[in-house]
Image 1 (tube, rainbow, N blue to C red):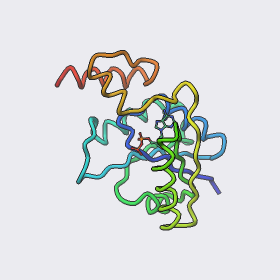
Image 2 (spheres, rainbow, N blue to C red):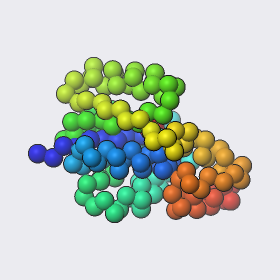
Image 3 (cartoon, rainbow, N blue to C red):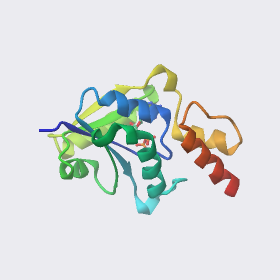
Image 4 (cartoon, protein in one colour):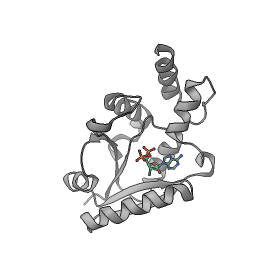
Length: 163
Ligand code: ADP
């Protein structure tokens, strides 16, 4: 049986920090499902779900069937069940991430105790990389290369050039 884990998030857009987590998680799981979570009622994302999925596929295509890129709406534990995944991967950068992540993990366990949450600490190089900050800096014309993949950087620049 394949050990599958879901790595869910907004990924608006995917950063090198996220990609690093996916590649490292492959040491412990057979397959990682990178799932873009969206909520049509309160979606304030810069990129559409389709764009986000496309960018992630572009960056992780070299890993073949070990990585599946998808999007989902609704409860994460229900999505995990539907995908036959027994684990949720989350990345931790700092203490500030911890409280929110801990609360989510507890709630998910309450909803389905058969799905375990695994926390992975961010690599030192990406401790301060956050999609929100990357967007803000890029919008103001700052250089965020090195923190996000080249293709994502181009798309970000194009977005802000249009607006
Ligand atoms: P959210 O689910 O809050 O929308 P994101 O899409 O930004 O979060 O990120 C998804 C997951 O990846 C979260 O667990 C987040 O803490 C983690 N993460 C975000 N950026 C990094 C990074 N630079 N290094 C490690 N983990 C990260």
